[in-house]
Length: 110
Image (cartoon, rainbow, N blue to C red):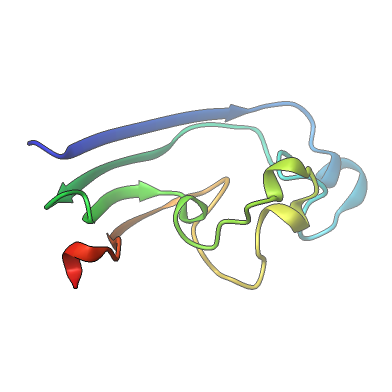
């Protein structure tokens, strides 16, 4: 279908967990620190409508990609900078299934 995009993203994490083995804190020491896993983290279909001003995504998604992104978090390793613990949303390491709709407000809507 024209204007559609299929996306699939896999990731793996292995090794010993610093948090589990040495710290025991709730939020984890690092964004990269989790139990070992190999998974397909995201797979979704995005369909654009009109001139790309409206689009929908359906499938397993990481909410940080479109909602509550922390622009400067990528420069830091500490998990406090990489996720917002008081905002319950499906994100690393366990994204969730969902449907999301987006609109870009432009002159074509006015």
